[in-house]
Length: 127
Image (cartoon, one colour):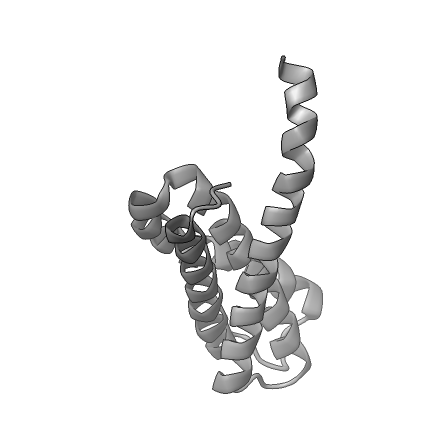
C-alpha cells in the first residue's frame, strides 16, 4: 500500500464513497420482510457488483490493485451490514450513509494494518 498522501487520500475517498453508494442503494432494497441470512448473502454479492464501477474509476487514478481490493471488500461489508440491518428494521438514508462511511473507513484501516503486518514477513520468504 502506498503511504504518499495522494494515494492515501484516494484510498479514503474511494472506500468511503463505495460504502455510501452501496449502503444507500441496498437500504432501498431490503426491508423487514427479508430473511437475515438470505439478505446478507444477496447484499454481499450486490455490494461487490455496485462497487465495481467505482473501483474501475478510481483504479485509473490511484492504481488498480491498490483500489480494487479494499473497495470490493468495502462493498461486501457495507452490503452485509445494511442488508442485515434492513432485515431487522427499516434503515433510513442517514443511517445508511453512516453505515457505508464507517464500513469504508473500517475496511481501509484494516487493509493498511494487515499490509503493515504482512509486508515485513513477505520479505523473509521472497529473499
